[in-house]
Length: 174
Image (cartoon, rainbow, N blue to C red; front, top):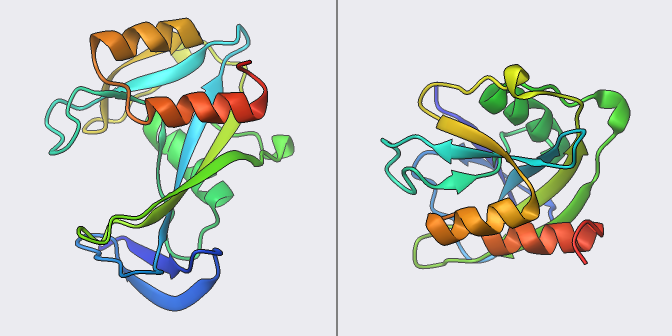
């Protein structure tokens, strides 16, 4: 079954269009939504995952959990779905997380226009609680910001600069 997405305008108003995510080509003024999760453990470390080596884009790169917002979902709904799907951890509804940082990407040539919401959630978990999904990630680490910086020097951390900006916006980095 094809995953469907809602199409939004720049102000996040629904346009009334719902299209298949696969092969979506968004025109000027059309956006899809994404969510990314900065998941912090009780020791203040962030969970990063290594993308599967057979991904067609960014194979083996490091990233934070997240994904596309499906039709009918909010970014919070997507956060609560994506985190358990990708790493087996639950977002506690009582936390009522809010986005800490957002940005938009416009690539009219590729029709790749999107708005991303970053959430910063603190969860009491250990390495044993993390469950990677086959085909999504092959490894994970719990990292301080310095660890993430070193990891980005050795390899590639997707959204590295945006992660830094989100942590600064949240007051985690000064």
